[in-house]
Image (cartoon, rainbow, N blue to C red; front, side, top):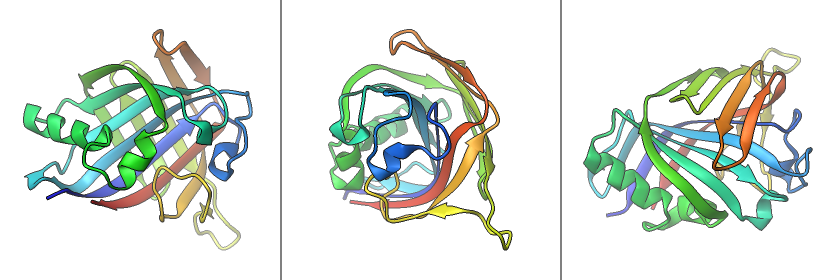
Length: 200
């Protein structure tokens, strides 16, 4: 039956604003430490409703994002049942194909999979993300001359293929994972938010 997932994405990293990875350039620091979270406002996987669940990846990207070899720690929100968690992980390990399978090919190693409380409160480019004790980020959007949100579209790389991305910055981004060698506590760096609709 496959999957249908709709929701919101938040991504922060230690690149400057705007993150060069999205246009295929090397990360500002040579490597990139990032959090990417997908919140399912509506969704079914093989007929199972997963609405209200969130999956997040804390990842170390060793060079150009298109070259892959990411190391990642995966977090599933603890409001997911065991059945929902198994279904979400099937999608995010590429077993059910589709656009998410194309993305997860970039991950070379998963160092851990955990269930944690995930707070995802992001609307119209502004909000917060908290992933257990592993990561915390705030997001503020950039706005154009007419007051609309600044967007990025038609890029060579995207964690939400086909969707415009709201460009922003993180007033605070904190992430720590010894298995990934990540220990970040910075202000004013890259943040991106979008909506997604994935079908397979």
